[in-house]
Image (cartoon, rainbow, N blue to C red; front, side):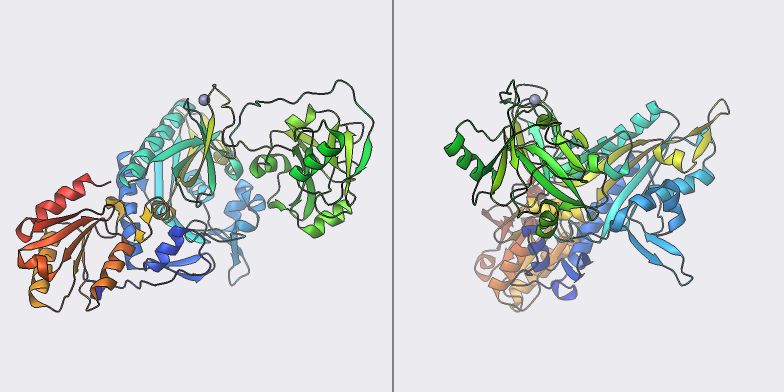
Length: 577
Ligand SMILES: [Zn+2]
């Protein structure tokens, strides 16, 4: 492709709303443009990346025995009502009405649609197993769309659905998808880790996520894995062993109210109380966190030295939308400013306690009064709770739950997920087949997603430098870019055109920067858009019959004879990821 024929609108500055380096780079390098919050247009370079990644996905899905279909983006609400998820989907589900006033959904996932297809069509065990997939646009009305293609309101997914007659076959189908996923991400140049994950709103028996570890601040998923054994989980599932169990008092002491002027954080409270009362550690302090669960306040109690895990917490609360309460709600609930909340005296509000809190005696909590805390508060005597469970987050350095190793916590980007759904959807939607004894049975179902637009952004987040993107070769828009420093000079143009023709004829995706721009502009743009291999043609080296060959991920420059450039490019591509 010639640069002047395509459309690569590179920019000097990143958009103000972009937080992630990958988002900034994709906009600056002319891959994507924002139409509205969470809605993006894929420009020619991005379109090529999407098609290349999609092709890898197709090849591996087909090789694993899945078959491609395309389902509708639009579905009548009744299909979602059947599974019961219309009620629980929450405001993330994009909904609309047609001209007759009937309710419709823009699908964010297709379990309901495919199950309703299969319910009417698949009748016999002889038609099983069956795995159907599609690559299609999905919709999610995100509360806070951000991070470019990472959390958009419209995005492209590969979603596959397997149907099996029994649990053994179900597991086999699941494993085939897991194997295919490792191959897909490897071919895309990404090291992925599979971790156990929360089944969440999808339901079912077990679930895994495929995560690309990134060194930047971009990762939204925390991934914890043991430095010794194979134990790995995402933030929502990660557990650990308590290394310093607190000494538990044998007797309960009297509740005592103390003044704690101008101390609100756990650190401040500990320091202040230590100075005043000595024996205080953060483990005796219990944090009281007030959350807004679908407009109503709920309370979480966790040890002062812990962090709350919102997903685990919501597994107790079951809210559609759960977020930290704002100052106004905190004041309304406690009658005090933020920082002095406590469970004692809170009326008519569900209180959820972490398991660790149950074991504690004589705890220190806020007193729901400005500058005041309680010492020696005790469960059942001074306050009651609604329910308890594991609601705390694992952190770096915590003890592995399975061995003596330590947990490492890294940020990662979720690029794929797999769900072993069992018979959840087939039962609720009446999707049944006749087994070999003529008995009616619900299908065992699996659901498998890959972010087609998200994965390339994860790759950019993983591979870039100060100058721009460094694409893995198999998902790069072009493998090679040719940069003649002055395209108006006959010898340079002739050399560029002939190398371009030769590489293109050999099936190597090549971009030729045939613009009349200054050399500096063209070289900066080449680094920015990030093709893995660059051929630079300058007058001086060309006089000696040479061009410069350089990999984007290295500063080494090779001088190569024009006649040998094809072989040299092939050899360089071989060595690249
Ligand atoms: Zn371990």
